[in-house]
Amino acid sequence: MFFHGTMKVNNKGHLEIGGMDTVELAGQFGTPLYVYDVALIRDRARGFKQTFEKLGITAQVAYASKAFSTVAMVQLVDEEGLSLDVVSGGELYTALAADFPPERIHFHGNNKSKEELEMALKYNVGCIVVDNFYELDLLQEICESLGIKTKILLRVTPGIEAHTHDYILTGQEDSKFGFDLQNGQAEEALKKALDSEWIETLGLHCHIGSQIFDTTGFILAAKKIFEKMNEWKEAYSYEPQVLNLGGGFGIRYTGDDDPIPASKYVEEIIGEVKNQAEHYSMKMPEVWIEPGRSLVGDAGTTLYQTGSRKEVPNVRNYLAVDGGMSDNIRPALYQAKYEAVLANRVNEKPEETVSIAGKCCESGDMLIWDLPLPKAEDKDILAVFCTGAYGYSMANNYNRIPRPPVVFVENGEAKLVVKRETYEDILRLDLPINEKIKN
Ligand SMILES: Cc1ncc(COP(=O)(O)O)c(C=O)c1O
Ligand SMILES: N[C@@H](CCCC[NH3+])C(=O)O
Image (cartoon, rainbow, N blue to C red):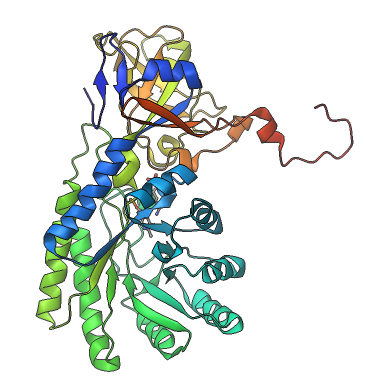
């Protein structure tokens, strides 16, 4: 059984998370429903911090809020003392609304607008991760006009390919992100930034991709970056104070996934950074990381209610649930795989293989192919595991389906942290072309 965190089976044979019966949660809050195991998120956050402490390394662990950003989540990140990576005005606005300390916010993005940069500068965020020449010029201009100085990291692309899905690769040369390290663009950007009286260049940033199972790519990236840092030390007497090696640490969605433990990623990466710093006689930089998925991925579970069935004789049985690609687009987008159980019948043995269909009008809206389950009946509760990262955050209103609510569970208590969207919410931004609209 694919249990983790505080999950267990209670004496009714129901899945329990955070001391709460998920079948009762489904009854109370309705389905689909996102349930987050808060203790597991705290555990993961503390694990990262403790590994750095144990290694005696000055670090910042910035939660990549694109994985799952809500006011409550940002407050939890603050409680755990992490920093926060935001990638848009909306994520920044959420962080500020949650009263997150701006000095611990890192602002990312490959096409930040003037308004977004102004907002970041006015709130004095900890650093801006500059992605391209357009942004570097714009930032310099805005700083000058507002009379505000800022700290930056330069995002570099080291020219390596991590082993993951093509759509979530970011470190290769042909990428929309960052200044290329090999072709001289990164050096040109550094010279520009060092020449600016408005910009303090804290160091470099690199993110090679997501759902990566070992440290080979990170180590290669660190080597390539140090090689350049050494050249730049000699040419410009510049040594970065910070090296941010991004996120991307993989998690176990199914039994086929075999990532190393989070602490191991950190230990091996730090080991290499130390080696490189020694090799080039450079001072050890602060090492920052930006985990998203590995902090929240397996802490999230989605509860659905089962509904219609379709049998294609001798081919496949389809079982539909009351959500789908509108609350979890990852299977459609990346062929992502998940495990699931019937939360109200956890102890029962599988009797059939069914494919879980979503309710959207799209053949590709399949959540799980060929899942062994007890013979599901109408109104069973299907719990899909490990939906905590890039599930709710990529949810949408396709087919005008309202987005589900989110509940945090911890120590036998459930707290609603995002309300279910209503049909009124769906109409909120619509304007009629004539007045014949019903309320
Ligand atoms: C710049 C950056 N940092 C951090 C992350 C977080 O990645 P993950 O959720 O895989 O840890 C991402 C997403 O891939 C990213 O683009
Ligand atoms: N959204 C992706 C990861 C991309 C992360 C952003 N660089 C996923 O669900 O796996």
